[in-house]
Amino acid sequence: MYLEIDTGREHDASQLLDYLDREREQGRGLHNRYGERMDHREIQRFIQRSEEYEYERQVIISPEFGGALNDDEMSLATRETMREFVKDRPTATYCYAIHRDTEHPHAQVALTGSKTDLWTDQDDLDRTKERAKDRFRERDLRRERERDRQQERERALEREHDRSRD
Image 1 (tube, one colour):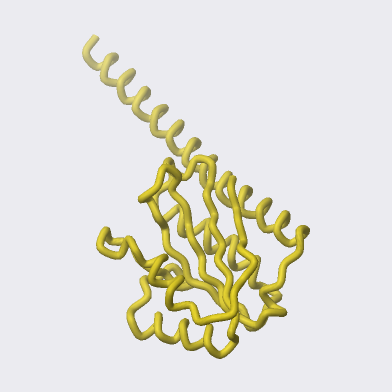
Image 2 (image 1 turned 90 degrees about the horizontal axis):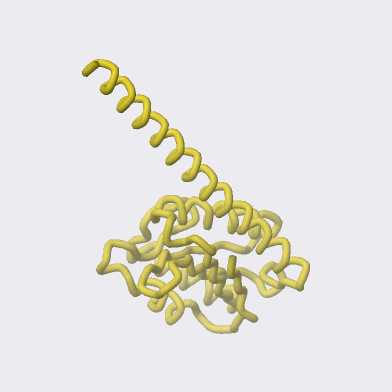
């Protein structure tokens, strides 16, 4: 699991959101904290909020087996991780995009809020990384269990089919 939280910057989020939104044409694009696609008006509100707080950060979450997760699974694990991160940070909000245009599929998150609320130390980073690992590991284990159940169902159907031919 690779997780990076940048040092933050004091400017509006428009450039960062343009970058995150680069896969819009492929059916992806920016999502709000509820997992819904953001429309132009919602993107502008996020940028205005960034201008109000004059601070933003970027988070990159790249799970080890990100290629095995579909967009919904990656999205849900990203939201769960970020929900925990912003839980006690009253001014913090975020949006994100799933990117599959690199060797390692990942989620990129734009955070905005007061500099105080977005401040992190090494312990914060380590806790967030562990939570992200746990979230993505849960998704991977569920997928494996479902695949095992599906294989067992298929074997049972094959055995039943073989018995009916005998």
